[in-house]
Image 1 (cartoon, protein in one colour):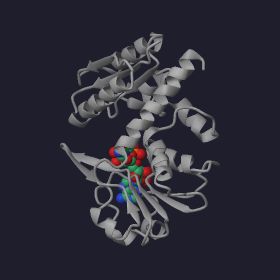
Image 2 (spheres, protein in one colour):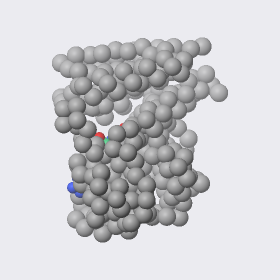
Image 3 (cartoon, protein in one colour):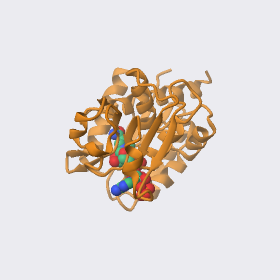
Image 4 (tube, protein in one colour):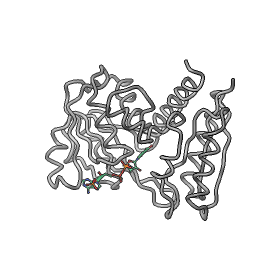
Length: 256
Ligand SMILES: NC(=O)c1ccc[n+]([C@@H]2O[C@H](COP(=O)([O-])OP(=O)(O)OC[C@H]3O[C@@H](n4cnc5c(N)ncnc54)[C@H](OP(=O)(O)O)[C@@H]3O)[C@@H](O)[C@H]2O)c1
């Protein structure tokens, strides 16, 4: 049996093409085969669903990754609902998110899972400490808050989530022992928002062409006790968690 992680890319967004290349290279290094379908940006929702359904039906394919974002006009959320939840490697299928909410085992959204692993690896215990997450988006802030509040040695945190509905979010941010930026607003987190010595994790980014603009202003390093680097911070851990989910999908497929 050869582990198989299929990838689907719609359109020719530079960053997405790069991400798919990285994932395929890693797949090959880890012994996965990686069938790939690339649809033109003009593809319809039905075209996208057909590709996903073909991979669902293929017993030789264990995991399926639909690269996000898809071009405007296509609905990523609807496409995900077509995917067999057992083949979800992004942890973003509604069934996977439901399992996360219930504390059941299953694929976990990759960037949040990577942040928990990164903190644990560096000996940053969040148990019993206040973690403030700036952003409640479906891919990062919301699942991260659920994850870090779970009953587990590497979680068990007191999590506060702030967003545009909390006008005075800096007041909460300054309280945080661990502050996670998950807003997608370049430079929104500045040194005056960071409690001296706090751990700062930069998850949110925006692209201007190929330039990556992080949420966390680099000058926060002056105040923080520890901080993720501007480039290569939560990206590698996200990809690592993708493959952890892919291994889980293979295990489910072989029933062990
Ligand atoms: N590095 C990676 O591998 C990786 C992976 C996934 C996501 N990301 C990045 O993580 C970020 C979040 O992703 P997402 O999909 O969860 O985003 P999203 O759905 O766009 O959510 C953004 C969140 O930030 C909040 N926000 C935006 N502007 C704000 C402001 N001025 N003040 C306070 N809160 C503000 C929004 O509040 P409201 O809810 O009130 O609108 C929303 O909750 C994005 O930049 C994304 O690119 C990175």
